[in-house]
Length: 172
Image (cartoon, rainbow, N blue to C red; front, side, top):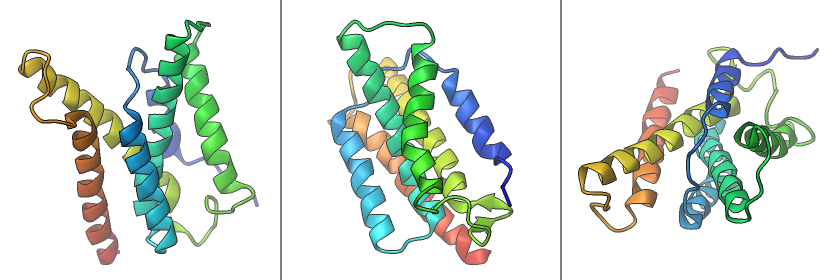
């Protein structure tokens, strides 16, 4: 039986696909998120929590690709949307098939796939972290308040979300 797409995940991904003009995040942040995903999956942590970090990793990869294309002066129509769809496709589709991490009937919370829910949250919070970093820099004369602020802000948001999600899942 084929599952219908998750409306929350589709809305979140569609909204983010329309965003353009965001510069790439640094490789250090991408590596930190990748390490978080690897550790959480290896420890058998709930897929909502893993999804939070995976969603951030995927979005970080989108921005990294966009930055590389810009550096190489590779321009084409709808570049942001195409890169967004391509990276999410390359990194999310394998979770459904052949890995069967997404789409298992018994792996839902409130009727939403646990991994997709976490990915939507992680994607949103990582994007929010980028915007918060930019806002803080604007408030401080285009300078960071602390070293590695660009890394710290999104990662702190992901950690806080992971703690909240863990506590909330204990109640479900």
